[in-house]
Image (cartoon, rainbow over all chains, first blue to last red; front, top):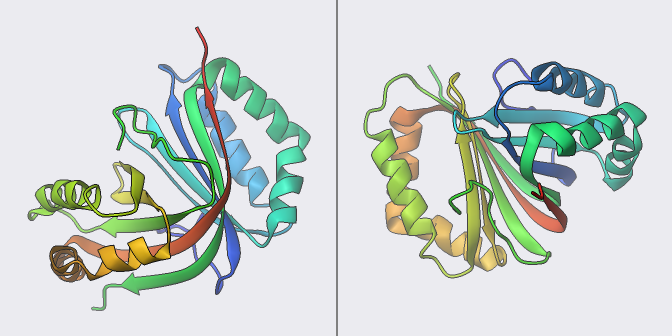
Length: 113
Length: 113
C-alpha cells in the first residue's frame, strides 16, 4: 500500500480482489493479523498493490491488485493466509464477500498545485 | 447499498467500478453530494449495488456494481454526475483513481448462529 493510501498500479489489464467485510465487535488479535497479512501479501509474486479502508461501523473494503489469476490462487493457498481466513470466520467477521475481477480500464487524477 | 453495508449482487459476470479517493480537509458540501450521488446511481438502469467506506485519514473506497459496461458509460454521462465530478476535482478530492473491472467470480460468507 502506498503512503497516500492509493495503490500505484500498472496499465491494465490486471486483476483485483475486492474483499468487503463486516467485523465483529472487539479486536481479538484482528489488527495484528491484518497488518501481517498486508505485509505477507506484498511479498507474493504478482502482487501489484492494495487499498484498504475500514469505517466506524465495522464495514471494511480491501482491494488488492494482482498480475494474473495464478498469483491470486497461489496467495489463496498460502498456509498462513489460510489459517488467518479460518480464524476470520470463527472470530473476526460476521459476514464477507470476495469478488475476483479483471481490471480493464483505469484513470487516475491528482490535484495540481 | 444494503443496510448491512455489503452489496447483494447476482451471479457473475457483472462489472465493478472501484473508486478510491483522498479527500481534502473540511466538508464543503461533500457529504450532501455523496448522498445524492448514491441515491441517483441507484436509480440508473443496470445498477446492481454499491459498497462505500471512508476512513479517518480521508481515504475512501466506493465500489459500485453494474450489469454491463453500457450502464457504466450511461451513468458517467449523467449531467448531475458530471457536475459532481467537476466539483470533486475543484474542491473535494486531492487525488483519486477509478478502475473499471469485470467481476468473474464471487464468494460470500455469513456467520451462522
